[in-house]
Length: 92
DNA sequence: CAAACTATTCAGC
DNA sequence: GCTGAATAGTTTG
Image (tube, rainbow, N blue to C red; front, side, top):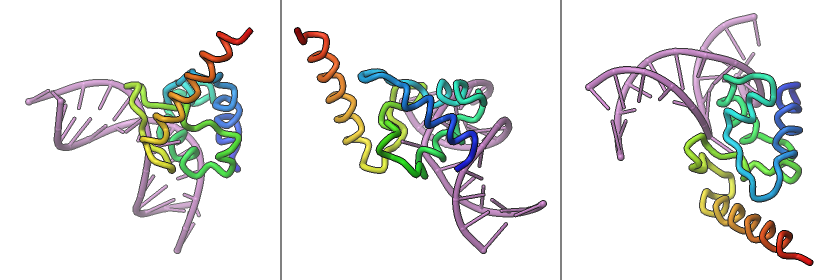
């Protein structure tokens, strides 16, 4: 576990549902605006994939970079979360 | 400590 | 739209 990784985990875990941020954004929030590659490397080796919604982190092009479970699944998760947000907004 | 790798991003054609 | 190069940090030997 490295300090930068911890920072990245904290920031990413703070991303709300249905919200996608770019690697650059996360890197900047982590404290290293130019370490977007490092963010990807960390998320790839993330020791806690369950507390780290890495599927909410996408490229600056809004195109999912990659996913251990498959890019398709990542998109599916995003769509699912979108549905959850909709449900929460519609919830009464 | 040094080398290699990476889920990225920017610039050029 | 696609290819090539650069940056910053992690991981492994």
